Amino acid sequence: MDINVLIQGGVNVNGALELLGDMETYNETIQDFLSEIDEKLANIKKYKEEQDMDNYAILVHSLKSDSKYLGFTQLAELAYQHEMASKAKDVRFVIGSYDALMTEANRILEVIKKYTSGAVAEGVTIVANNDSTSKILVADDSNIIRNFVQKVVPTEYSVISANDGQEAINMISQELQNLKGILLDLNMPNVDGFQVLDFLNSNNLFAKVPVVIITGDDSKDTVMKAFDYPIVDVLNKPFTEGSVKNVIDKMINIHQ
Image (cartoon, rainbow, N blue to C red; front, top):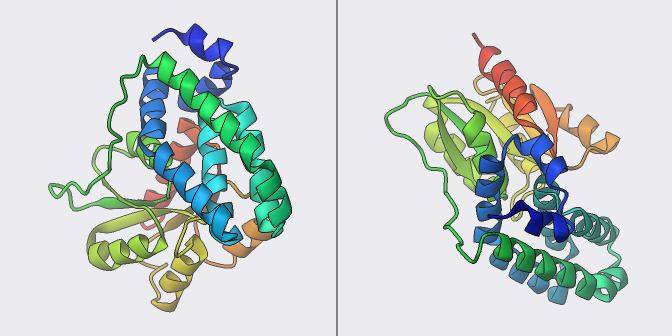
C-alpha cells in the first residue's frame, strides 16, 4: 500500500491519523468502509428516488462521518450539504446535486481501491463474546464506528453491536443482566437513538445501565434534548481513541 496514492487522490491522511492513531488502524478502517459502501450508496439512491428525506438524511450523515474519519474531505463536505438539505426537506437541492455527490463517492472508491490494489477484505462484524459476562453495547449504523470503539473497550468487556435502534432495544432486553454500558448513536435508520432513550426511560433502565451518546450532530438543540435524559455524557463525532477511552471509563465506573 502506497500512501502517496491517497495523498495524490486528495485524501487528508494526516487529519485521519489524528483521529485513528496509526496506519494499521487506518487500513483496517478503509476495509470497513469498502465492506459497506455499496449497500450504503444503493440505499442513498433508493431514498432519493422515493424522496424519503428522513432516511436519506440518516445515510448521508453516516457517509459524512465515515468520510471524516478517513480524510475524504470533499466527500464529507458534499455529504454534509446533502444532510442539511434533506433535513430541511429541500428535495430540489438533493436531486439537483445528487450526481456531484455520487461522482465524488465513486472517485474516492477508485482511489482507495487503487491504494489497496483491489484486495478488499470482508468487514468485521462485532459479536457477543459468551465467555464474558460483562458487556458493552455499541449501537451505530456505521461499521467503522462499531469496530473503532471495539478496539478501545477494555479487554475484560465483551462488545455487542446493533445496526439500528430496534436491534439496540432487542439487545438491551436480551443482555440486560450483563450489560454494563451503552454507546448510542442518535441518527440511525428505522428506530433512532431518541426512541431507544425513550425505551430506557419508560422501563426505568437508566439506573441499571449507563448510557453515552455518540453523535455527529453537535447542534445545541440536539445536545440539550439528549441531556433531558439521565445520560452520562455526549461524545461528538469524529472522536479520537483517547476521547472514547475517557467516556468508556466514565461510563463503566459510574455505578462502582
